[in-house]
Image 1: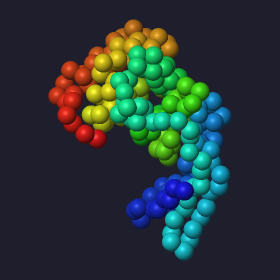
Image 2 (image 1 turned 60 degrees about the horizontal axis):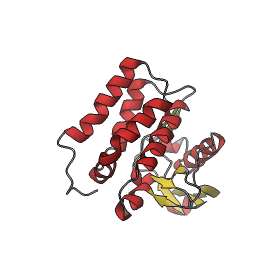
Image 3 (image 1 turned 45 degrees about the horizontal axis):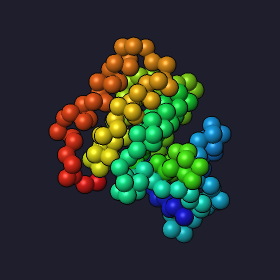
Length: 191
């Protein structure tokens, strides 16, 4: 179960409750062939001023759990790059994207959990939105540390799967490298 509450007096959650938005996002991901949780039910609980969703976990391990166990393999980095490019090509902007919200399933697919904060566009994301979404991927130092040794495999796969203009690809690669070359990359940092 996941419970949602309205945090502010003026909130879009009063119009479309978060549990309903969560349900809609799960359905949209499933319709686009993206592995995600299995939703069982949506509840409105007036007595505690909450809404809730009842769901099945997505089987597998989060990418963060995999990083804690072992080094991130280049093949998984390529799969991740292709997966993110596929999301962006399908117009999916996942603001809460990080290694703790991506699951490697038993059939070696990558799926998404905690899917409340996403937007769906009709066409592929622009170069600006792609860069912005990749920035969200690198909020946590542990994720940067995990991907750093295989970053070229990740970015090459992302760019190979994305029909980007040369200038856009160059800007994307430059921005991506900044995460590893700047002060953001510190091996001892925690989540």
